Length: 128
Image (cartoon, rainbow, N blue to C red; front, side, top):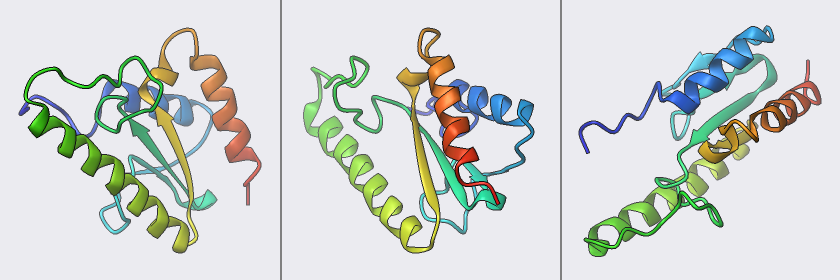
């Protein structure tokens, strides 16, 4: 567990490099916002969460498997993560922020182009 990273993960770095290459400037892990979003775009009043499919219980994803051993530990942990995500999203929306969630599986080679074009569409529809 000590080797599991909460920031600067490979999927997060992919999204950050893409955004920077397209001219977006952002802040990272703002502690003042609920859930410490991975990427904060203040100009667009938008936050981006890059979620791991296993850790955040991505429904219908092959990477979101239930561990066979020690289920009494893992199931409540993963359920708490999912509930915390919902609670943080509610608070952020209440504060006027737009939320974009990018799942780890959406950044795989065969999906990444569609994911990034969808991300640009969402951000360009909200330009100041």
